[in-house]
Length: 149
Ligand SMILES: Cc1cn([C@H]2C[C@H](O)[C@@H](COP(=O)(O)OP(=O)(O)O[C@H]3O[C@H](C)C(=O)[C@H](O)[C@H]3O)O2)c(=O)[nH]c1=O
Image 1 (cartoon, rainbow, N blue to C red):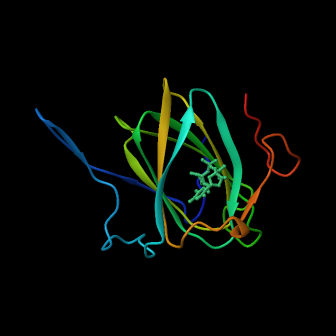
Image 2 (image 1 turned 60 degrees about the vertical axis):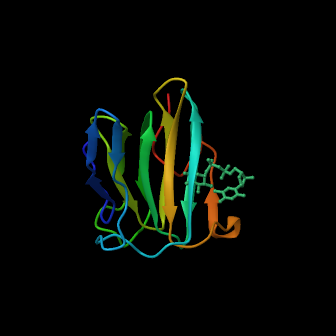
Image 3 (image 1 turned 30 degrees about the horizontal axis):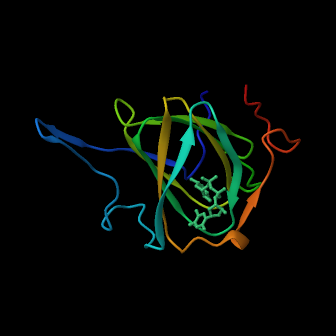
């Protein structure tokens, strides 16, 4: 998919690999996208499962995939955005697409594990998790023009 969502950034990350293993870079407080620290967690996604749709009213998220492979779909519903209506597909994994996704608030997203037996989507958010701050929609809905197959 060719759409690009305004303000959604994909930042390639380094993996420093040697015979003992590797260091996978993720997020620095000096980086342009850093908005402060609230909480860090991993979302485990079993093979082929899709989680979403999700939407955060306020929090800024930083995703990366330290294990496995994830397909992330984002939808821009902001009427005043230059990319209003855009759908962006992003592959994030622990190999050739190792990258950090900086996801500002007010973007709908859902994600699927493409790897076996699961994938981990790491998330660093700028405020502690608060269920009252998020919205959810079923995968099959009339508002988001994307069909998961
Ligand atoms: C994130 C979180 C969740 N929970 C509880 C709430 C639910 O009872 C349970 C599962 O949460 P949820 O269904 O939201 O999990 P995911 O679908 O993996 O989604 C989570 O990880 C993806 C990447 C997101 O973007 C979501 O914002 C985040 O909630 O854990 C907590 O108690 N504390 C927390 O910090």
